[in-house]
Length: 296
Figure: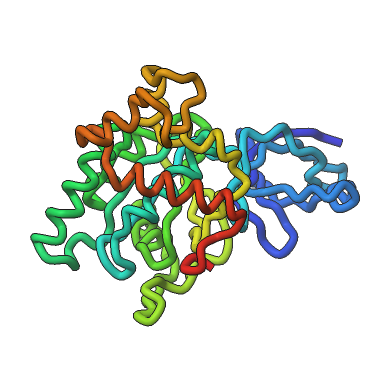
């Protein structure tokens, strides 16, 4: 009996592909996982055993850093968030939902604006001016596939897992096709009535890129933020968290408290008003404990 460790890079019909230091090994999970209601996920660091007949078994999942998505990806280091300029239309509200969700999960985010060639110069200028704000507060923004392709292999560190995310139809599969030669993910047609695409990626796989991995996911059509504790929500808006050190009251919620630094910066325009408005909307959503109708 031989033991080894590796990363789950794919799930195929009940089998798990595990990348070890020397090879990719197809394994089956031991029945103990079903018994303990634990399902290994792509991105999990696992232990495997290979018996004398050469049959491989996945026997243990090592502690996870995080678990996101459906189907899930474990141990995600960074999100490359794909936001389309059009089809589906660019939405600051949706962008703020994604950024809040991943901040809550303690995962860094870079933003890629797709389909910029499909909008007018004036509309693109408006979108880019909005995204300039996000760059200023700390989010890296890419505007072309060429820019992503030249930077990403250097950005992905050893054993890191970067994950593509974004609304259905935003262009994740098209982007991954341009990043990895030999991949031909099916791309989808946008539903005009819903202003969003159908999921075309139905499984999760990790692909070697840089010194680590890139994952493609079926996307996030509806992100549920209701499990967030309402008094912690403000901490997931990164510029609010920085400014809150100068609020008069510790634990300030930036609502009606006197000498609130966040509200002062909203008034002066240093904090984008749409960000603050979205913060208030998300507070209501969490208070109500349910997703808004348009996201269901």
